Image (cartoon, rainbow, N blue to C red):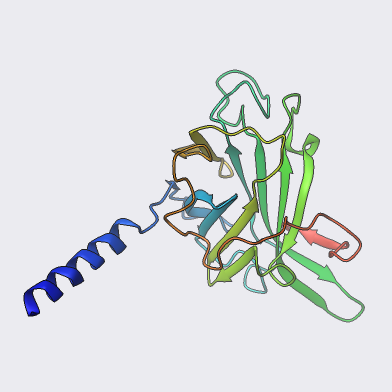
Length: 229
């Protein structure tokens, strides 16, 4: 009876290893880079959301980075088409991006103190958008108030971005673009929302999908925070 049990154990181990999420893109920053930057990003559909695991080279928020905290933007081209989304010109990697996910180390000043937190803003970029600022604000999240969508483990940030907008294009393939400060844009291609079985296997976000959409900006969200500092 030992041999079948050993065979089963090896089979389970192999299937677990195969399901491990793979990095979508990686970046090696110069040694003199001051701000925290993304050095490893894993992105993929998870249920009806886009899940992300972002590894920074330094603490992206808090007292450690003081006034030089993270201010990183990831672009998602959800249908891998330059005809939809952000329009920056032919040959520009960000052209075609449909979502912008901005990750910022933020500081909210109070009367006698300051509160630090990680802020995540999501904007949908329509076909006529010529900049991120022209995108529609879909969500304004932070790790203190939205743990079901923003989680932190040291220098690793886990995000769950709502992908249920009826106007968000989708296809079998999608692109992820990261343009580090002073460097060239880095791109990665991965299965999109329309891929068979998309989001049903590998789990990137540890907490799983949520039942409701992400909260939009409102009066209960931090309003006087200094982003990116």
